[in-house]
Length: 541
Image 1 (cartoon, rainbow, N blue to C red):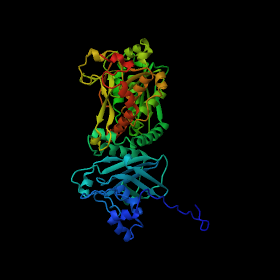
Image 2: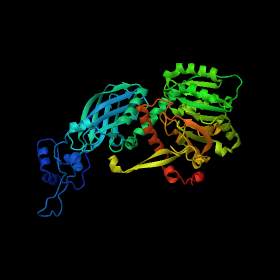
Image 3: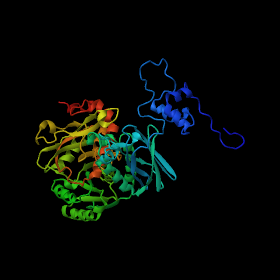
Image 4: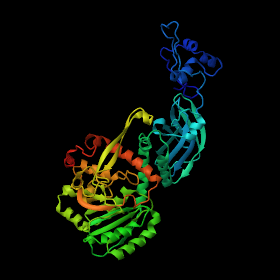
């Protein structure tokens, strides 16, 4: 509204509060009467709107006030003064060039709960709702707050702006439900995109969560952080695979019947060993090997190893080198894009044939069995001591009561289990060919046409974990369950790549993502070792 003279908009008067009586409110709340008299509030109504309503104060006289009985007209501890400044700190604000924003801190909100953490910078601002933040234990904050019992006073959050944002000094405001706020000035630290992802994933894995850590680290990111991290990592993955270096060590004239795709990270040693062991197989010349390296530091050595291995063992090798860790899914998708054969074999670097005729038997099964059984299948995998490691995978659900998570609702998270893990090597029931809910990505054989139909591995998953189960479930939903084939290999689990805390953080994100994507269909027909999904009828005893 314009007053017609000054050109300034005139603020409309606030609508009257229903059944609010100024005189009664002051009579019921003498502390407010004093605050108004001292000029701290212009009226009783102003106090009620700012604080009284949240404090549960009466805005009108109680009717039929009982005699000889105390009536509470405000929550204990409430006063007419402005709420006390909360105790807390914003420890870290880190911003990457692509707009990844990471914040950590703590606040004593054991009595007055946190409402938001707001950041104000020249040119931009953001408000993290309390629900979007992960809450963690902070023993140092407990000591400062002098709490008799520990609370999850710590918090951290992540958001991806997908654009470059200016850094500098930031006004950080921690606001509580009562309206109390703490205002701090914090310097924003600049960090490389890849380094920031590592920082966040390390923090996710190492923070102290209330309740069971393995569960709560996953649960804590479910409201907002998980999806933001997935989007941020997708951007990094696209950059990592955009400019690969490719070198081929081939014999001229060979046309492979199968392309073995191997993702390497952190350890170059297994390339030569895998070549040595496969070269002993009859029919090995029908295979080409495509190694995709996610470790830039290994590039020079792998070029030497591949050249020597090709000369020594005679198998065709393609080496694809990436400038950053694109993850298992993206590396395998890139390898598949450069494969020459119609049969794709995704294999870990620490997987080796257990049978002397594996190479021929694998191709024979592909040629002789119906497509329903060969479009996607896995094999029995064994530990180095000969005991069974894997005869297919199934799904279980972990459910945690909400009170253990310091939240209202119970929560369910999916996990993957292996049929026959640790079982004797010759268990006929476990080893018989059959459809299974999923097979491990340590060995998956697929028709290239079916792989393309499913659009490959999902690159939403960070580094590795659960993308194999996701691929198998997408295949199952499309009408073709994964099969366990009558083939056997050794798997030196975890020996073929370097694993660090950052990978534990990525695994937590992936478990959240897998649960978010699949919890309903899994709960409906795929839970447990004997699922009731009609396509898996043979799994049941």
